[in-house]
Image (cartoon, rainbow, N blue to C red; front, side, top):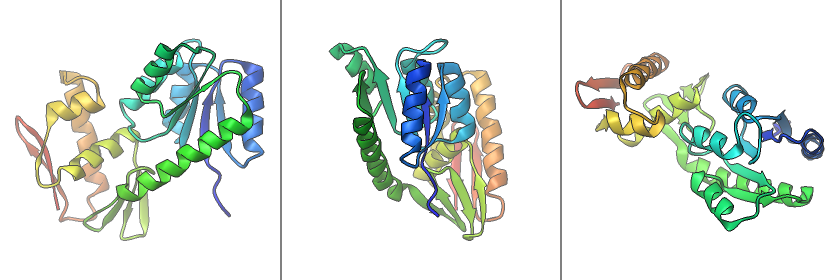
Length: 227
């Protein structure tokens, strides 16, 4: 049985949100619906959606702010903005934040579904380049999973997956601490540095079954992944 694609839909309009949710579910999508940006961010962190459909004008946290926060920890998840704002500057801002598509209200469900499928196809092509062998582990970056010897699978958090991805991309080289802190945490202050150290410890534990894999602390500079 094919697993349904899980979408996170953030739409403050109760009626519109329910209509879009039910329409997508009839096309075999699994939809997590939220009516404000704060709840949407919570669900993004716990539900592991494969695509986001975000209303721009929402209470508590608007769609652009939400997208900025998600892009700080996740470079890959597709984002479609829904908005009644039609000024070119708004469209430009949406794409500059990291949106992949922009649909103006009112819109047809068929158009939304076509755009979703197109984005998912493009993402699927990109995913094939981000399944990486690390010693006896297979690292599926888009799914945020580590599999040991094609048997045991461990789920990573968004930040763990992105940190490991950057370590792998710089394998056998020092990954500059300040650069990666600014990219993934948005700052390289003391508290972010301590947070990164915690994530490094977690990754070491999840990679410990292969003793040839080391994440070395290069004091004063950063970390180095060796295999």
